[in-house]
Image 1 (cartoon, protein in one colour):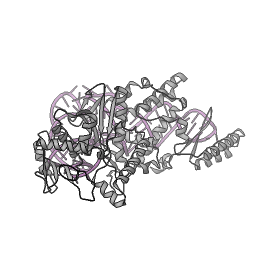
Image 2 (tube, rainbow, N blue to C red):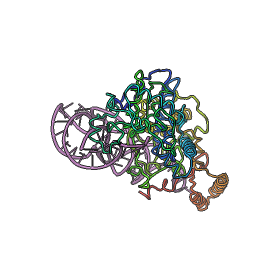
Image 3 (cartoon, rainbow, N blue to C red):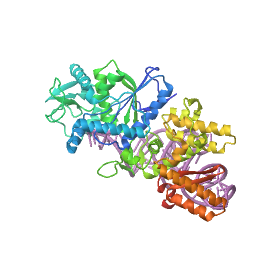
Image 4 (cartoon, rainbow, N blue to C red):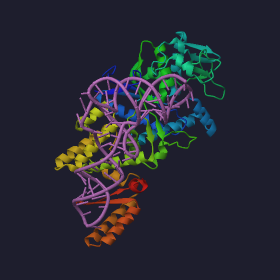
Length: 471
RNA sequence: GGCCGGGUGGCAGAAUGGCUAUGCAGAGGACUGCAAAUCCUUGUAUGUCGGUUCGAUUCCGGUCCCGGCCUCCA
C-alpha cells in the first residue's frame, strides 16, 4: 500500500485514488525560455518514478505535465536573442524533451500548453468574476484573496501573516496586497489574446487550474512540483480552481520535492554555479544523473556535487557488475521478481535511498551465490527492481565498455592489445603484459582478468578511480 | 520580521523509544604472476542544554547553527 507525504495535511498518508481504475497525476512542467537545469530535472525524475509505480499498480494512469509557453521571461529572452517567441518556445521544448529522455524519464501522457488553453483560462476568469471572487481594474483582472476563506490552507499561512511579511510594494490596481493577477493587458509588441477585458495575457497561476480541469476534471489525485511552488503558485491555483469549480476538490494529494543546491549554494547564474542537464550529459550518462537525483529522498534538500556523481557512477558499476551474469537477456513483465523489501521501501513515500541499499544487498548476493540458478535468480531480482525505477536497462557489457561512445576503432585496438597481453602472459613475459595494461590504462581502459578470460571497462572520469589521491 | 524544513560516523544517506541500515573513503586479510573485480574482518555518529521515560538519536521544551519560502523560480 503506497503511502505518500501530502503537503496539505503535512503528513504521510495512505494513497487512495478517487477512481481506483484510473489515477490522475499532474506535475508542474517547465517554463520554456532556457535549457533545463539540474534543478528542473529533479521533479521530472521523482515523478517519473512515481508514475512508473502507479502504472504497475493501477489499470490506467494519466500523467499530465504542462508546458508554460506564455511568460514574461519568455518575452524577455526572445527579445534578447532577437528571435520570435514561437521559435524560442519550440526550440526550448525540443531540448527539454531530449534532456528528460536522456534521464530515462518517460514522456507524460498529456502535455498541455498554455498557449493552446487560453480560451479555457478566459472562461475560468469569467466564472470567477461572476461569482465575485475576482475584480477588474485598469485592464487587469485580479483574484481577491480575502473572498476565499480557504486561502492559505495549503501553504499553512494566514492572510495576516502574509500582510505582515509583505515586502513588496502593492501595485496600484490591487485592492489588497495579496491579490494576484488572473489577466493582464499586453502592449502591442507583447503577445496577447482578445478577451472581454481587452487584449492581454493570462497570469501564470491560471494555466494549471484551467488545464487540470480541461484534461483531468475538477478533481484529480496528485498534484506535484517543486517545494518552492507551494506558495504562491499552488496556493493560488487551488483558490482559483475551488472557487470557480466548487463541485470539485481540485487535487486530493499534494507532493513537493525538495530543492537542490550546488556545492551548498543556491543555484544561480550570477554565482556561476548553474548546471544544465545537457552540460552534465557531456560528462556523465543520463543514468548516472538519474540515480544521483534519486540517491537522496525526494523531499530532502539535495546538494549537487562532483562527489555525488562519482558515487552514483560507482553504485551503477556495482549493480551492472552483478548483472553481467545475465548477459543481455530481457526481462519483460517480471515484476514478480522484485523483492518485497523493495516494494515496501517504494511504498514508504518513495524511499529510493533505502531501495538502493537493497540493490547493494542483491548485488552482493549475486557474487556470493554458490549455484548458477541462485545467482541468476538474484541478478534477475536486481534487474527487475531496477526496471521499476527506470534504471539498469542497459546491457551490462555495454555499460562498462561503451558508456561514452567508445569508437569501433578503439574497441578493435583494445581487443588487439588484450590478445597481445594474453600471449605475453602465456610466455611468462609479465613485464610486457603489464606494460600493455599500462597502455590501456592510459586510454582509460581497465582490465579485469577472470578464470573465463579478460574483460574490460571504460573508466568514466579520471577522478573516479583516483579518489584515494584526491581525498 | 513572518512561515516552513533540517542538523546522524571522514563523506553521502536511511531508520528507529531499547537490538544503531547501506554505499564511498580508511585499516587488515583472501583471491591474483602483479593488478582489477569480488569476498571476509574492522574503527568512527545522532549540534547543544534541559524535560518525559526503566531507557531517547528518536517524544516535548529552550538554545545555537544551516537551508528554503514570503518577489520570477523545479
